[in-house]
Image (cartoon, rainbow, N blue to C red; front, side, top):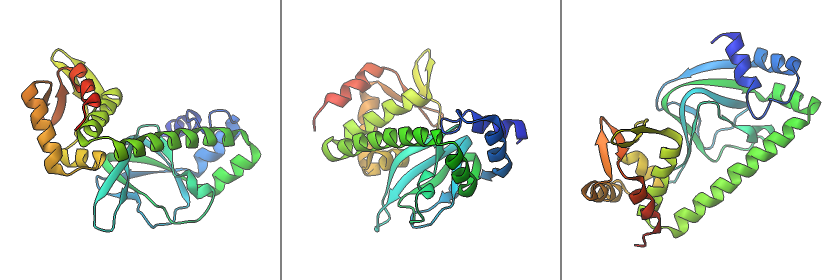
Length: 232
């Protein structure tokens, strides 16, 4: 990756866009880029971290695992997203995993230089606070859905989110332009693969969901949205 692209990635971030060019240059000089294959971990639950990360290209799944091996996916982080900021506050072990689910190019920033920049330019705190608030609000919404919504509503909600993030209009409907398996949906919706498969089969029979070359095609988004109002 060229120095100019690295610098651009930092300067365009919500965290650092309001600091001087000289500070951006210092951050860029300290950053490195890692090429990470599928199923590698940026960090795992229980590990201590001293770095911050930005996904330059790819997709990283943030999830939490139980003692019995079950995994619940909280969110997929994608191009341009920064994370790992808890290490700026303490050295406690991470309570979540960050696993690569598509070949990824990840910018890695040592926390030492970030702390120096924050001390010099406190405006960064505002950006960090804003992101933390948004993350917290999204997490509360997710928890409420998991606690109180039936599985089909959770699956429909996750699918609608993917439409928003990765939907491509085609003549036949909206194509989800990333591969997401039924195992992935089981983790995203906190349900078994068998039950998610049964929901998808029902939606295919009803005619508003198809599979095209390992991608999902939603032929009628209004029918999918109606699933958010259905009670088990």
